[in-house]
Image (cartoon, rainbow, N blue to C red):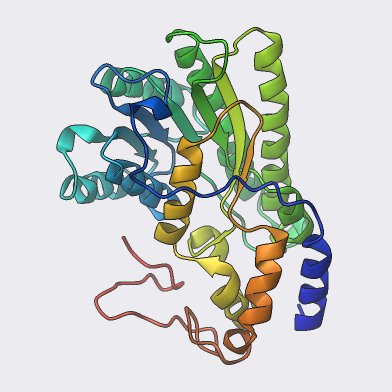
Length: 330
């Protein structure tokens, strides 16, 4: 993509009304932030795909509020165990638990729900963070197994998780307005228009945005007013999903548009906790902010230097470890 084309598109996008929820800082939340609390006065939070990347950083940020108990899940048992152990070195062991789960498997998701109910009591927030992406290939060149895997995780997984979350939440203390919240990781309106990801990934993320809208309406029509469903668009996060098959040119743009998972989590967690009603959309990267970042960060796009050098190689921080693709290890 060329610089002039991108900035032109971002400028047009910046004219769209920005519906972002205003950011609050962590630690500013008291018991009144959530109407119904867990039996030990802590919020119960479930995060799928929580063993690495943004999911792990979200778990860590929720725990840092000192008023949350978190259950994370992941498909890789060893990675999950390492993630839980890492978090338990910082926080009370009883506040962070993990269970292996393939979200595309109905039995695994049902087991996750049972585990979460046992460990957390009341579930206040369920975040469907687990996601997959294919390589940047034409659909005709993608293996059938890869298509099934990506759609299974992104769409079927979110459907199954929403189903189990609703089953738990409708048994909890009821309210005339949403006090329990489900978040799906769908594309924002402008993100869907400008993303260059493969159609296998893009189509599933757009589907999640529609899932959120339809499910929110369905719950309201069914009289389940205690449950809200929302869209969460974290923007460009330096994880496997973003960096897979990324080109040196794209990586130079990431110097201005992307952020590390922990930075995004610090932005998202206060906004998640402040969410009210249903059908809300939380976006980390609005058209206006994207345009501003590109305009002010143009030297980093040309010369590199923040996350990647001019050749697309990762700029490494002393003391940190990185995967071969440039993703920082937890």
